[in-house]
Length: 331
Image (cartoon, rainbow, N blue to C red):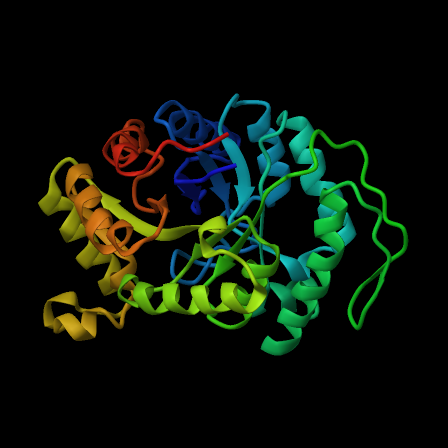
């Protein structure tokens, strides 16, 4: 398993009818596969996120969508970025992702995090709890999920979850990868050092040096060689063949969020979500990702293109520019 180049689809609002929605998702996944992306991701949410759109905008259930993509693709790995742990019983989640692995002939990845979107919890009836409680639950969940993915039959009696001799059949393999996503230097990175094959770091790009230092500390505490934990960065790409048009689009996107980029100093800009954005032509975006992410020691990048990733050819162009920057993944 290696994910040096991933493509996330966070937006399902670009078709004129619901019947056209999933064919558009399939088209993006197939284009990413043909362009050499290692993995395709959907979000595990029930409502659209505040920074992207309104809650009532379309949002597919993650694992149903991924199973559909499994039958429409051949090589690309499939995952949620990331599964909200609070939304599913951990043993059921192990069964769900293992079934996705069977359906996809060994292409599933378990992307998982603690959960954070309070509105979804409130309106769907899931317990939200405190920040500390959500990470306690994730820790316990991984103690059930990880052995179930490895062919073991765990019994566990914790504060939040329990399992008794939990079986998980059928399985194609005993090394289904676990990906943790987040930016928490103590809790998320600590769990990644203990359980994960891959850590997708979600933060502003200027924070990456500090994040990598913290990750190395967590690996040292866990007695793990940091080189055995693959890393990636979640990049928000705003791409157009006309770089000026892409940069104008970035300004417009930030304006809708109440930020006037033209008035910010460079230091102030680094404090906004613009520090996670990469705008320009495909080649310009590739140069920025190389300098701001990969040169710092991050292994790979997962991109989303909320503005125009659904337009035919955009994913291919970005893949063509980014693929040479990352080493060939190991199967």
